[in-house]
Image (cartoon, rainbow, N blue to C red):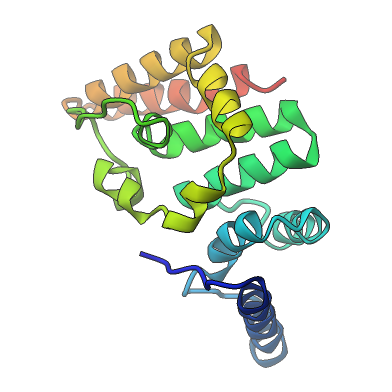
Length: 199
């Protein structure tokens, strides 16, 4: 599990060290490779730090440097909450839906609801139930009651429930389908589920 430093000063130093590493990669290689995943770790640091100015700057920088990045569930959760704090509720809700699809267990786990493994195709280790344990404790402590209520209202909304139900049906089916055309069709449908939730 990623451990978040215990003071704001140490958090700021950690963020600064990651940004310096990005700059070195650009200087030495002409691009950012970030095999370590530093770009993901900055989001939970910013959430705990609760510095909205730096959060907005990092989100813009991240999107400019990694426009097609698939993301990682903890990073996506933190990003959606930061966007909520910034005040862009529609965008935050869409990002929360992205989080839900990246790991179908994470949001109910955050909400302390009963979570059990689902017999479905999991695309990566990130999408497994066990990955919920990777959420740093300080991130959990930083989620306000208002933010939990927002997460709950989104997660249990008709749109989220309908999309999530179909997503699970598709990936349950994909675990047993070997015919390529049908698999492509199912993946295409799954990809379109998120666009329905874009406000």
